Image (tube, rainbow, N blue to C red; front, top):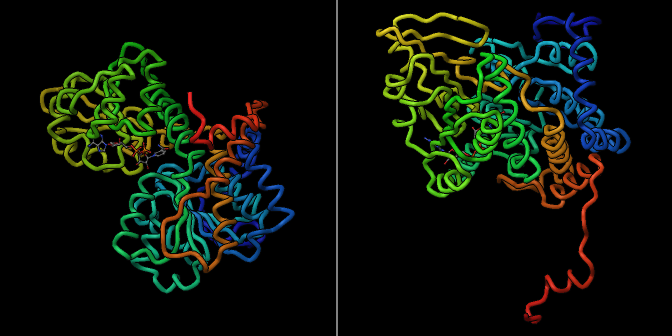
Length: 427
Ligand SMILES: NC(=O)c1ccc[n+]([C@@H]2O[C@H](COP(=O)([O-])OP(=O)(O)OC[C@H]3O[C@@H](n4cnc5c(N)ncnc54)[C@H](O)[C@@H]3O)[C@@H](O)[C@H]2O)c1
């Protein structure tokens, strides 16, 4: 449903505005688990640190993102939203953002390639002064096709590992045209969101899509970074027998000492029951690996882009394909074996489940909101660099999260503080 919603308030393209009430209720439910973001929203409502700032956000359009958008609007921003993945939009939230919160939104679950990019373009038509990305698609479009917008833009934020890697490459090649705050690099983001959020929601997505029993299954986790560690931990908790595939010797060693089997993908491919990629790399599982997989193998990706799986390679091996359940596509091979690809290889936690729980997005999006405030405050004084979130902001978010959980921590005595600074005190 595109065009003007009730009252002709704004431009939008969402699936069905009649879903708005359901979306608002789910946003409220999520908000209960986002106390740090709520505190920021209350302060923003009083101080209006984003007054007059136009923000275009390209994020997964979920309940948590909805609450982040409300926070930015409370701070005085004019906000426009589009999806950062064609399959991750929650259509009821998109409707609520338009109808209940009057935020122009361009996102439909299952949108095709052209619609996805048209929506990005629509978000940029709002002439942002600040871009907010999850995977650097908006920045890439500004730099490649909409350079006329650069002059207005104070800076941007980036949510995920893959986006930060792209942006740091742009900085190294001197093509970054405005400053970016790498939200993913905050400790209160990647240590929690990538590990516990991706860990839980990836298993949730696989189970919702397939109803497979994890206990006893051989689960192959490709990539033992923050996300991979989380998935391996949670899959083991469900009784899975974990095999880790890594290219980094230190991470591989860590996986070994964490008690997992470590194998190259060529070996793991022959024995795995469930395959999950979380590397940020491309063609991690290729045609030669699909060729040797067992009948019934389940394959999915929870890394940012679906290029982690060589889907054209899989398709070239298949004599037929069919959808057997929502988000489950069967690839039948010539010898009768069937391999099952989940969610078209898109982030399975967002395609087949609801993404990360709000309690963890609370910290990620507190970082996003404070990063916007930082950019708005610093304005044009920032250089065309990728900045980290200031450490004091990271500490403060952790402190507030602990308070919200009712957890008190120890503090150092003066003597201890002195001891920590001293090099003279001996044994
Ligand atoms: N599903 C989600 O909701 C979600 C959430 C956060 C991040 N992500 C995405 O997940 C991906 C991983 O993020 P991360 O924070 O764990 O990154 P990370 O850099 O911490 O870990 C990635 C790991 O993959 C390994 N790797 C690279 N190529 C490989 C290959 N060919 N085979 C095996 N291992 C390989 C790297 O050595 C590294 O240890 C990124 O694309 C990120 O954007 C997804």
